[in-house]
Length: 229
Image (cartoon, rainbow, N blue to C red):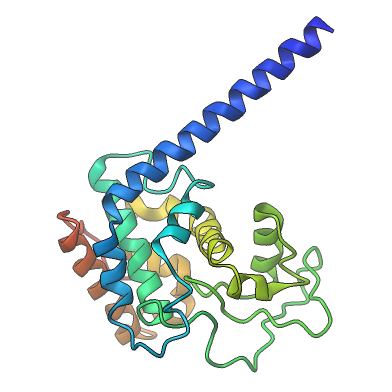
C-alpha cells in the first residue's frame, strides 16, 4: 500500500510539474504573441473571411498549454524566431487567417499505403486549420495525440479553434520544431519542400520568407541565416 501511495504521489507531482511547465510556456509565448501581433495578422484579411470569427489569440494560447516545448529550449532569440516562423507559415497557408479549410475540396488526400491510419469511408483529408494539415497519415496520429477522431471526423479541425491550433502545433512540434536551428529555409522544406524547394516554386517560397522577415522585425529579432530552400 505504501509503495502504491508513493507512486501515486510521484505521478501527481510529475503531472503538476508538467502543467506548471505548460502554463509557464503559454505565459511566455503570450508576452510575445500579443493582441496587437495576432490581430495585426488577422486584420489584413477581408471582413468576409470565414476565419475572422474562428481564429483567435485565446484559442492559440489555450492550445499552447499542451505544447510547452514550442518556442522553448533555446535562447530568447531562438524562441522569437520560432514564433515568427510559425505565424509566417500560418499566414501563408490561410491567407492571413482567412481560410479554415482548403479552397479546393475535391481531393480526398487518402494514402491507402498507410494501413495503420485507414481512411474512413466518405471522409476527405484535405487541408484544414492554421497549417492546413492534410492526408490520413497526419489526421490519424494528430487525432490520437490530441484526443479526437481524426480519421472518422476530420471536420473537427475546422469546427473547434482550439483543436485547430492544437493540430497545427502537433504537426509543427513533430515535423518542424527540430529543424528550426537550421534556419527558416529548413522549415519550408519540412512543410512543403516537395512543391516549393529547389526551384520548384520560388514565388511561394519567397512569400513565406517575406512574412518571416516581417514578423521577425515586429518581434525585434534578427531572422538569422539560411532563409530559403
